[in-house]
Image 1: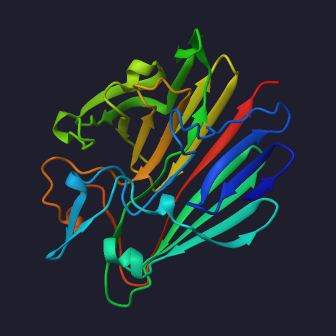
Image 2: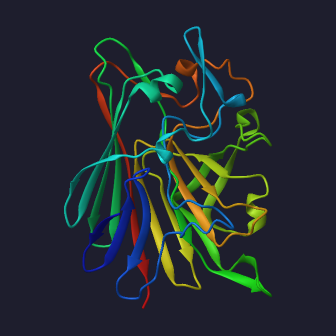
Length: 298
């Protein structure tokens, strides 16, 4: 486990999946990150690469070849190489190899940088196309889960207790629903006024809440009982997901900045034409990043 620490926060990152596993406020001892209780969901903040969301039938094509990838891709379960670590930063890298090429036929170098400054953790995804001749196609995104206050009925969690999300700037955002198969239903998407929206478990009865966003969008998770907030600011992210498992009534909320999105039911499975896909010409590099500012009243 890699530890970053300053006067405000203590942060831990697991090289397995290059996954953020803990952010503790030093003044109060409050843990912001979900601690992966298997009863509800056994992850903390998985990295999504080289796809975001679900492929139809878990299948896609490159040229005349078919490949299979499970939801969110393989990076979250891969061991990254730890490259550099300081008291306030860490860098991890994952490269294509014989095994990855069997399911994802592209050369790549995927570097993840974590930087701790004051009360903010910045995560940057740096994708390099090392090929001298082939275009690299990919999606990438974050999936951090945050502890939130809940009410209890007996020993069971009953519902979120004064938890909401807020978009800035407020306004009309395209909300994109999901089908029962986890595919986007783009033709049923509608613009929705988003300012501060209270959350209940029933908010997720149709799976994740997904919005198309722009470069100025900021999202804040507000917990009025814990008196805590997490503010997410993004760069080169085009979609944003909000999720908690509906049937399990879990005490966490995921805020997910994405550069990419799931398939729709009308896909022709051609990966190069996939909605929201990113591409890099040979030897090109691109960075997608987001920052998380953590605050809590003592």
